[in-house]
Image (cartoon, rainbow, N blue to C red; front, side, top):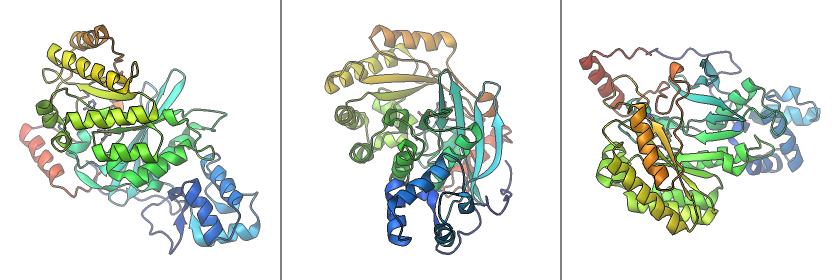
Length: 396
Ligand code: SAH
């Protein structure tokens, strides 16, 4: 594990205290930026639109370079606002084209963002928190403990860094076609900041992504699923991992608070309200949740879901073979076991693709993101102790 993060140049240094009273424009979606222009700067709304294009389409963050704004406005912006981009601590490319960034959020914390190119699309996996408080047993992020929520600026900053690196131009040169909130953290535990960031992702003046191409993945925070339905319009993915409450509670402790029947009801309301499918993620772990009895119960649950929503294929299952990390007690099932699990689902009429492992040579696969978390829980220290006792080297 590396020590404290070395801070970069002054302009890109997130550790530098925000200049007194200056607003970071990365924190604002279209509505809040318009308000800022009208109320604080005394300017017309369309000026806010020009600035959004400079920032999110052309990656210009210096007001002096925003040449279609008058001198007086540029000076006002300089006095009241800034665009503070995240600090890239390092980035790594995988042999399969996957790209991972470690981004400094403050002097003690860093998060990871992953870009996954595929035929005809480019997906960015974005983090919502520094670490995660949920403690799902099979997830590497959980072993890092939790520090804090990310701000809207820190969430959209991840998209900005990747989009700039890729030379993405919304609607023209699309390198970034999808965003999944599947990085570090539980996005629904950071509701307002995540929803605002997702609105910038979907805005034509932002990254111009279609609603259904922005996906929020949750471990199952039931009341927040309903709030999401009311306040946003994105695709929903739910980390299911088990068709039985007892097993799910063991794997995803949040299940104790919001058991399967409540979770599935919330998903039905979401799918009905949005008239869209819900993706159920199922991480396959050898001998834990990969047996025929699990496949059959899962298929039953998914069929019940389709019936309740009254839509064919309302439930989409996404099978994720477990990705190992140092010290974990779980294993990935072998290929035959994965295929027979999938076959049982297919025979029950379900769409259930297996998510191919991408970027595992750079520890960028699902469940492998760690970042650098100044843990506020005791979890990281406990996990390290456990690793030492096992003689496992976790120097990565
Ligand atoms: N907290 C949210 C967002 C994280 S998404 C959620 O739980 O949905 C990350 C996805 O990868 C989730 O479906 C998670 O269950 C899955 N995952 C976590 N650890 C994994 C691992 N070691 N191998 C494969 N998938 C994993």
